[in-house]
Length: 304
Image 1 (cartoon, rainbow, N blue to C red):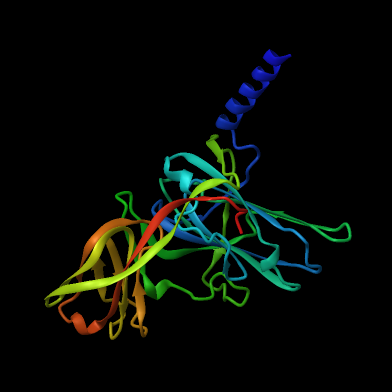
Image 2 (cartoon, helix red, strand yellow; image 1 turned 90 degrees about the horizontal axis):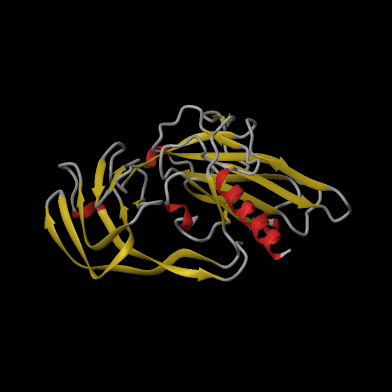
């Protein structure tokens, strides 16, 4: 009996590594392999459920939103997806973000490697009186490139002029969005299920700069201690289309007041950062420079 149980468990493990367990995949139909993508789906809720579970599978990194609220909370989610070609599955409880009206579930996706398995998502919410709300990501979902690129070398390019503040909320205009493409006949991937007790990444500390060296359009800001994470630069007086380099981040300005240049899905070790801009760029354009340190920790609660 014990031998039979062992064989069954082994077979289940091998099966989990070799197939996607019926996951349905969507992708942006025309995005380049390194482009970050926004996905969203609008749905109605007549009766607020006691529980609503969203299950996300992805071969990249992502942030999950419901009605504009960041459900993911951790940064660089999901942490175990660091191996190319591996798909990580995570479940989130989202009932408290729903409302009795129009709702939007949205995902900001960043690739780790070239793949058409960008996103698989399902929502299941049993009603209080026997009804049920359930759907999966398909060709009815809308998508749009996010104006950002994740390069294989661990850098990012972001165009602030392409950003939309309300992209993940019900009131967003979808005039420049397109339908997602369903991906059929894809080869299987190794699946990794994340439990409620798991390793994750969070913001640990925010450190302002100690001093800086001014070389005209090139400025070097130095921090009190090195940290691995992001450098966030608040800018003012930039012109639309001005291009800055903030360490490994290439940032294209929109010209709006107090825009912020900061990575989203990549990190770098920073004890100092070189900020370079066009000839007209100077110290007067910089309102603040911060080092945002990120650290691993063990999540012991549900993914809310």
